[in-house]
Image (cartoon, rainbow, N blue to C red; front, top):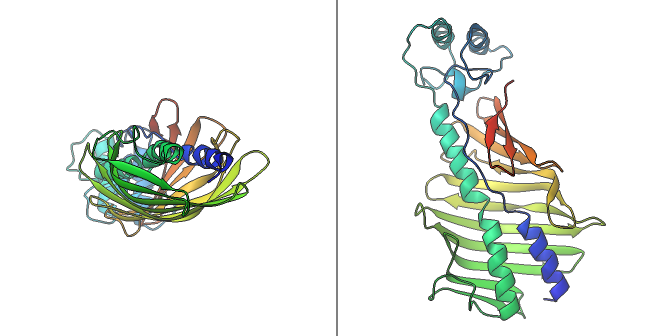
Amino acid sequence: MSSPLWRIFAACAAALFVTVGTASAQVCGDADNSGTVTVTDGVQTLRAAAALTSACSASTCDVDGSGSITVTDGVNVLRKAAGVAITESCPGASVDDQVETLLKNTLPVFGNLTKLGSGAQAAGTSNGICENVDGEATFDQETSTIEFFNCQLEGFVYDGSLGIFGDETALVLSFDLDTTDLTTDEFFSLAGDLSFRGTDTGSVITGNLETSFSNLGDVSVAFEEIGTDAEGNFVSGSLLLDASTSDIEGVSAVRVGFATTTVVPVSVFFADQTERDFTFDTISGELTPVSN
């Protein structure tokens, strides 16, 4: 692979690295995510129970954890708003934790691969690239493929291959990797292709990756026309994580949007057709619920 082509790959792949912060805990019964439970939340819960338009999601308004929003939930929210003690079992806290784990396990891996890939391509060997002495990352010039063998970098171990095909105007990265997070011992596999189309100002990334987590199940990741600038920063488009077949109960998808600002939107979509919105500060790493 030519040096200019590799620099394009490195810049594009580096842009995939996103540091995810900790989600603020939601309040059970707080339908509008205002931070407190009020009579308005009770009304919203009763509307949801009657199948009317509502700000509710299952994670905030299924107060008794029955699996659906009912009139009983609405009454309990009103009681809580009035200061009366209730028994509550919203699924939201565990769901937030799982979504946070999903993002943390999915997004950081790309930044590490960039470091591994650029060093292996330049040297043709893993010398000085993998942090462990028995790890290896080699670049095959003929097949344009990087092979990883027990290669450790910044808390992850990589095994498998990363293929790089095409030219400066149309580049394809082909993933077939197994990854282990040394901090949690969780296993993560990654397979699929990403296409990088050159533009006057940067590139546009599209494609799909199939992922499988030992703790969260299977998740499909779609790169939805993500635009980058000349430095590889995301400036448009979105990343959609399809969690409908994952082990995250009640969550169908998570979408991360990108813009020229440092604060970007994150939306969590639930199986009951409701949605919960966040903003993510890419500088501080803070994920904050948005009040509806």
